[in-house]
Image (cartoon, rainbow, N blue to C red; front, top):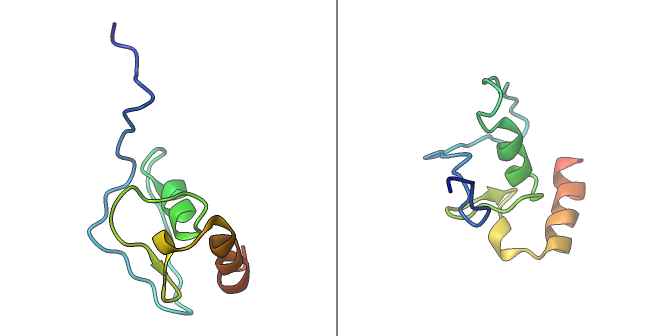
Length: 79
């Protein structure tokens, strides 16, 4: 049986490094399924990265609670 096991998550996004300074803008352009929405969700703290460091406005998102990520998103990202 070759059904997908939901416990085995596929790698959606694999970046060595991505930096964006305050006030900088970037255009994310890639084919469907390339991970654009996943990247934005991780940066916004809506989704959690399974590995690596995600730092936004000097805060390590892995160390923040859900309410802490919500507050950061509202105060610093305007989302």
